[in-house]
Image 1 (cartoon, rainbow, N blue to C red):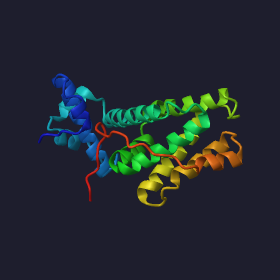
Image 2: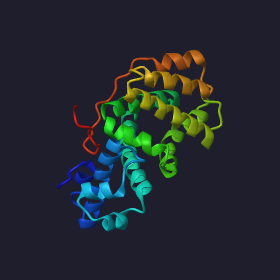
Image 3: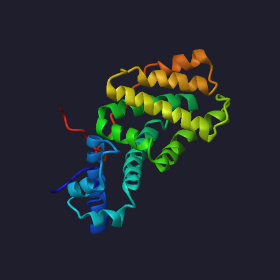
Amino acid sequence: MTLSGPFALEASNLGKSGRTRARLMDAAVDVFAREGFQAASVNEIARLADVANGTFYVHFRDKDAIAAEVAYGITREIARQIDEAMSQIDGAAERFSFATRQFIELATTQPMWGWVLIRSAWIVPELNHRVETYLSSDLKRGVKQGIFNREIDPFIVDAISSMILSALAARLRGDAGEEAGSRVSELALCMLGFPVSEAKALAWSAITLQDFSTNVLPRAPKP
């Protein structure tokens, strides 16, 4: 079987080892999204990537390790594109609200990787630490700008990150609609000490969501 997912395409110019590693990551995306993290097995990932089980362990320590790399690779690319889209936005509150709403809506259009992120985040602590570095930068910017009055410590970053992932999960399950991003944005801004009326106005203001390139992201098959 030839697997040609986004990680494999990105690694097409690498050597054999790099291409094999990428093929395993594409296989993991498929297996995690289809079976869930707990039910997924190294055997199935290796089978789908058309490699021996031993080859898997040459590249990854265990299932947690490949989950972290896959989810971080997806998150890194999305964060890069969102950051580029916000290049003209300086205010931390505006940046946070835009990024939160954009992230949730983009994940909704790519449910396969959206579920991979959610399922991995609760289980792989390393992923949380990596992802939260993106979030904390804008929160700390808000403190420097004098618009957030909360200390930006690991607890507050983790709490807000969990709120965003919960909103994403609700969106993917169909328990929340397009308002999910605005609702979680408003709640988080209030937690950070942003004035309540301004938080509401900002979180529900009209924005133009970007049509990002998803050539490096797994696409869920159409039903």
